[in-house]
Amino acid sequence: MNTTNLNPPTQKNRLITMILAMFLGIFGIDRFYLGKWKSGIAKGLTLGGLGIWWFIDGALLLIDAFLHSLGKDSGFVKDARGQDLRLVIIRACDTN
Image (cartoon, rainbow, N blue to C red):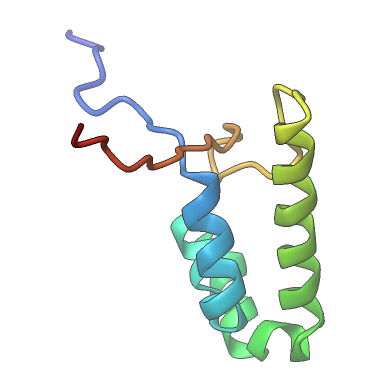
């Protein structure tokens, strides 16, 4: 029996997660992106825990990104598989 995984798990993007948390986190969209659909439903139904859950998630993501920028390899915000988030920086191409 072949046990190779055709679709290896990919790390979620830290920047996309922060943007989703800030603008659509009140509806739990950031949780769905991370694969945490049960807490995404709960967060959406309570409108981000009346804003408290939304604020805490946003603050944790910002602190996690700040610590990552200081050189910390693993963060405390994980996706549903327990993997760290990755940071992808999009840079403009030089046309010179």
